[in-house]
Structure formats: C-alpha cells, structure tokens
Amino acid sequence: MANVSSSNGLEKRPKLRFPGFDDPWKAEKLSDFAERVTRKNTNNETSLPLTISSKDGLVDQISYFNKTVASKDMSGYYLLKNGEYAYNKSYSVGYDFGSVKRLDRYDMGALSTLYICFALKKHDSDFIKAYFDSLKWYREIYMISAEGARNHGLLNVPTDEFFDTKHYIPQDLAEQRKIANFMIALERRIVAQQSLVDNLKKYKRGLSKAVFSTNSELFPKSTVASLGELFPFIRNGFVGTVTPFFTSQENGVRYLQGTNIHDGKISDETAFYVTQAFNQKHSKNILKSNDILVVQSGHVGECAVVGDNYAGSNCHALIIMSNGGECASDYICQYINSDDGKKKIAAITTGNTIKHILATSIANIEVPLPSKKDQQRIAELLNSWDNRIEQEIRNLCKLVRIKEGLLQQLFI
Image 1: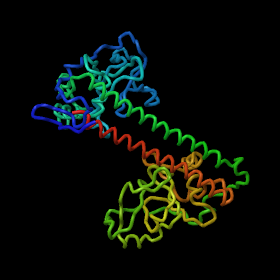
Image 2: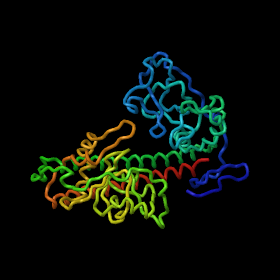
Image 3: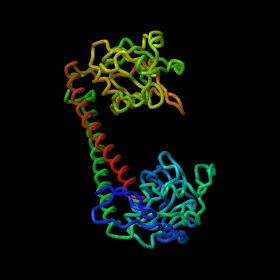
Image 4: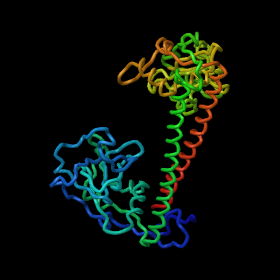
C-alpha cells in the first residue's frame, strides 16, 4: 500500500491505496447503486425476527436479547434476504448516526419497518459492507438529520434524503475487490484472535474449578476457612465525597476506585489523585503491598492484589483485606475471581440499580485452604494464565485499532 493525496482539486482519492490503482473515486448517490427494499413478510415466509447491533450486525432477536421483542404477527414487517442491507437510525455509543449492516448470518429474516432496507444494484457487496463499517458516510447523515430531532433514540432521517446521500466509490471493480479481500482477511484474523482469547478464558475457568474444589484430587489436604478468620482487618474504604480533594499527580497521592480494577488487576484506567491532607485524614485506608481490594459497588466482587507500585495509595468504595500472613494474597484473589467465588459474592450482593456488598458480609465467605506452599503454587499457575490472556487481549486490541485506522484511510 502507498500513501497518496486525499484530494487533487475536484478529484478525490483515499489516503491509502494498493499499488496499481490511481484513478480518482467518483461521487455517487446511494440511489445510483442501491434500491430500497420494501417487500413485506406478507405470507410469513420467515418467522425469524431480526435486530441490528452496531457491533454484531444483523442478528436474530432471540440470540441477542434472549427473547423476542417483535410482534407475534410479523406479516407487516419487511422481509430481508441474505446480502441485503438495513439502516438502523438508532444511535449508540460510538455510533452517533446509527449503523448500516448486511444480512450475512441467515437466508432471510423479518425486520421492523422502522429500519430503511436496501439492495445493491451494482458494485462489490463486500466493498460496500466495509465502506459502511468505516462510518465515512456519517458526514452525509449529519447534513440531513435535523439537529436535536431524536425521538426515543431514533434519528430523524427522511428516507428519500437518505437515498440522496453522496458516497465516494472507486469505479474499478478490481480495486473494490482488493480492498474487500484485505478487510475480510483482517476481520478473519480478528475473529481468530477473539476465539483464542475466549478459549484461553474458558480453559482457565476450568482450571480454577479443578484446583479450588474442596474435593480436589490435586490438593486433597485442603481445609475450609472464612475470609474473616484469615484476614483480621477487613473494612470498607472511604465512600464520602472526594471532589474537593482532587489534586495533581505532582503533589498528590494515587487514589484507587472500582474503575481501576478489572480481570484481577489494578490499572491506571482513571488517573485520580488526592491531597496529602486527605490521605492523612483517612490514613486507615492507606494500602500496603499484598493487601487485597474488592470492588464494593457497581461491578461488585472484582478483586485484585495491591502491588508495590500501588502501596501507599488510598482508595474509594473498595473493601480492603489486610493480609495477616496466614495465606497467599494472590491465591485468595484468584479464588474470589473464580466462578465459585463469584457465586458466593452474588449471594451477598444487594441493590437493584447499583449493586453493593459490605465488608461484614464478605468476611463470612468460606474458601478452600490448602497449605501455603500449595496456595502459592496455585496462584503462580493461575497468574501465568492471566498473563497469557492479558497478552492475547492486547494483541486483539491492537488488531482492532489497526482495522479502525485502515477503515479511515482506505475509504473517503
């Protein structure tokens, strides 16, 4: 691929192109290369209700919602066939002007008349699919959607104006195919990477189940003890208003919150610091290396061990388990994050809108307890799998970023 000028006077070219292609791309109305689909499911040719997910595309409602939200009688719905497209005017996070998706998973399906459906008259369908994934067409929707005219999450996009929107398309089918094949190959690589991550997580869950079982053949001498017995200091972190105590990194103290804890690790997802005065006032919450933190509200039960890099920090709405030295912190953390541990956390969780757990309740949770040497062996084993999973997740995120960048450079 080569970087090229995105425009030359009235001629339009993408920023990145494959060798051998230099012709400018032509502006076409959607109606030039697509026609509206309005056929109805009159004879109930399909009983499969569809919905559009901005992330997953056209999917059946039962798989997506675990139920159907369509009418029992879908004869008035559009009948969409494989290879045809639908525009969802609902906005969602990252998709401010909705999404256009092609029906790939099924031969046909029924779709609400709230959607705008169309079929291609010309051009490579895989290229057009990738083009709509690029969101380059948003500038046109922005021009025709009335500002502030959103009704229950739906954009006010008139159908006739939608088909009048302008799109830049290469006229050489070979270039369309080249781009389409490249994006298909990249998407398959992303799917394979996601599958690897999912399988690693599945294997690790099975491994956790095996080692934490009280009847485990691996560690038959395990006993059972409550967290309150193992950790004499289990307390709720500060839960008051912190806003007046915001400060900068230069003269402040790192302040950990629930948003900093995911998948058994502490991250710098949110950089938050408090003053030295606030830190001293709440000195009982100053963290030490090997303390265990448990998220107290929100995504409750997420657990992580405090490393040397976070020792001395303070915390907000996190349960602190100060290690009494009788057990390995990493082992306890792995247990709380295991399926068995999550079930026990769920049993003590309260609240409907915002979930919540208390230190007094978590102290009663019982955990299997092999020898400390075996605890360390288990923790090392499971931590090694976490590190592998984390690395593959980073690789997945890198591939997704590459795809997002290419979608912006390969299309106009």
